[in-house]
Length: 216
Length: 159
Figure 1 (spheres, rainbow over the protein chains, first blue to last red):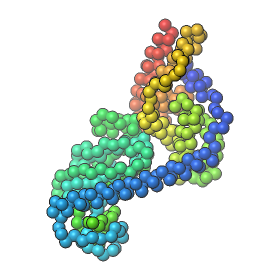
Figure 2 (figure 1 turned 90 degrees about the vertical axis):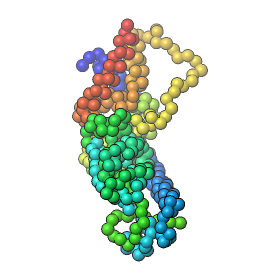
Figure 3 (figure 1 turned 30 degrees about the vertical axis):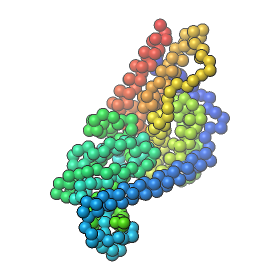
Figure 4 (figure 1 turned 180 degrees about the horizontal axis):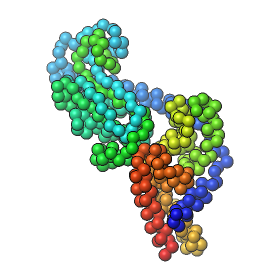
């Protein structure tokens, strides 16, 4: 070990030696945990409302460009057995992964030409999403916020291949493929939801669904 | 390592050390206290998923949270009413140490985290890589770059 390393070791030891008397106690931690939990709930609620807003706006846009007039208004519901048809469904896939630093892949139906991607990763994380082989999204996932992104797709054959990965924020920057190649897979809990909006009978139980939207 | 009692014991046994590590990351005791409280709170919320050794998980939250705060906070100069004292009259080794301290504080958060984990916590490059979510090669690269900057400052001070 050279002089600088020895001096650095001594500096780190000495500079941190005077820990304040009070320090950290379990009460402080419990208070902080309650605050974080409340903030996450607020963020999740805001994300849900924002997502609903995006979808309602998209639904309105579709009507203006010639949505079929027979689409009827229905109440929002998540019950897969409720028989209200036809209506606009958000059909999608929710994928939860426990590993970062590795590209995860799945397919979604994409007949409308636009997908809505929702990411729920963690602070200090950066997410990449590729759709049909092209990088569609590169975004920071800080503060446990749920973020929504509308991404146009070609939807070849009505199916799109979605690949996604998260990496530590510190590793992000530069070409996504190279960033991913430089990161060793590590444990990380994250969720990606990819949704397509299209007219769909609410009673069809063949796909997971998120909400049955009122066309308003 | 699943129960509240285990978590409380962990806080009791490790918080002082975690506080020192956090201080070395942000160089400010109130910030360090907030950082440790945040890291431990997040660890508690995920306690069932944390394995038998919570240290890597907690260190990872510390490093990531600090990096996140560092990016968000304005890091401009702080106006002062008086000029700071120059280290001219100080002992040579004190001047060198101050230069090293200043250079350390100027490092990007990821490089500083690598040095703190390696030279304060005495962790191996593999362990640091697991904590920071990168490869051991990246850890060695970051450490090498950081040490090069510290050596340059140290050498200038000794001239």
